[in-house]
Image (tube, helix red, strand yellow):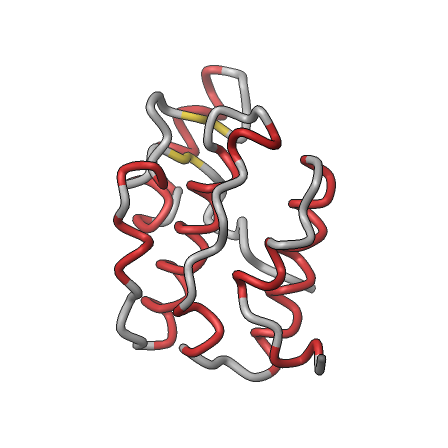
Length: 127
């Protein structure tokens, strides 16, 4: 397969542990940013929460990523991103100190906030 056209679903299919997830998202973003294409976001990735035991973090993050990319590029968002299983049951913060949590509450992109993920404004930025 030409990895340049690997969908988010295909990228997530190789995830077996939390560190795999981080690499899969970063690699997907690198390819997507070269050639943004709504078709790469259409197919729903398999749920990872049971395998990763992360409380749904990876599933919510994948949906947030797809939602954010659709918003930025003016694509119609796929329906799968709105499923309840793609929302964290409790707020999750990328930082643990009260001051940093306050900053994340303000700057987290809406696509993440609505899924109870509070990350930096540049969480999906790639150098």
